Image (cartoon, rainbow over all chains, first blue to last red; front, top):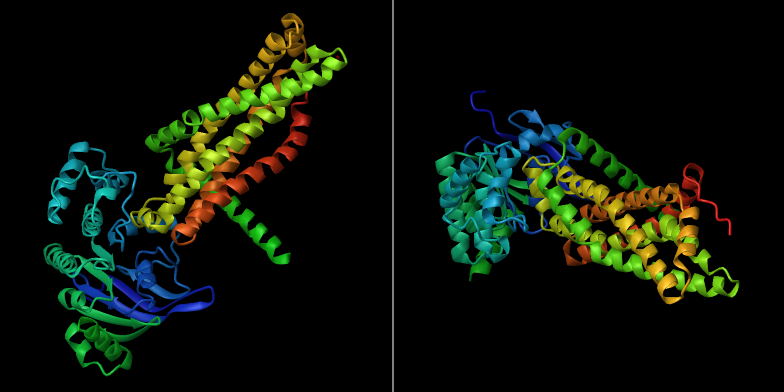
Length: 250
Length: 259
């Protein structure tokens, strides 16, 4: 194959306390494109995302990153793979004890970069990429929800990852901030050509960002295909979700 | 009952695994200097006042009670050896550990628990960082450095307060008091206390970090983890102290008291 997918998920199953959360999920994420995992609360989206960089081990099935099956790898061997995959966490997951600059420099420092000038230059570079130039000395507690997400995104981009995982990037934001984050993600995706997986329940964000959509409900894939094709889907779960979203807007 | 026993065995197993991971992480990845120094400041320097006050007042009150009884028998100068043995072997290490458990055990569980529920631990892992190496190892090394010093201070201030009270307030002649104290307190007694304090410190870090790392979702989960860290650490100190006392009596026997 000329251009093999970056992530390959095959018959992935996961259960917590006897309750099945993922029931045989299979799909592939092409390199350089954005795949949006869409679904309501409790669909298993965030759990699925945590399998893509090995934060969770599959109960059965497989998750491959660039052809490498993560399942059998011990934690120590997963670390270099994780360093190639940036993560934008739902609430930012910024380290409270560090300022913005230190947060962003952290993954670079962990990768062995010790030159303060190089670290400072890269911090400023990624901060300007997310529109927060000059904010490196602020503490996370002093940031708004939207700024926290941008800083988290800057931290994810700092080590120049090959892929980006975004967990509900627009959750908790007002519609204007939500649109601005979605546009930012789309612009960065086009500039950096990252293999991106975005989890969201926001149809608007999906339409703006997605090259491919996976619709998940109760741990089962109900739709996998283009964003345009989602509206044509005959699946009752998909139609119900689109209908409910339309009612929410009225 | 069976379930409780199973849960306890599982919990002890998890503590054993965390201890193993901590040792492996320290051996393979080495020590992070900055967080370790910051923990030494928090544990070692931050606990000075509480440990010194606890040691001094415990030594003083123990000396007062011992003196009241011994004085009736005309053995006022025996107060020194009795207080010193008790402070060195039991009260110094146990009280210093209980103070550190209350102060630092709670702080460790709350900080790590908050990091857990706000996905900061996941963020560490996602960036290829070992959370045990980053969070547990520095605390473990810091307590290994701090606890012998804190225990020594609790012992010293307890004995100093006892001597002040017995000699200056109750009027026992200083040469008698000192002669008895020196004659009946051995290096083994002090070493036993320092060894106990160090073991208690390791238990406090292990239990508190484990409670933080396994905190359930939300503020309630962090609150519960913090309470359990203090209660479990304190109980562990008291229970392990009993067995350590028996064990150390074989290796570092108590100095004999011949009045």
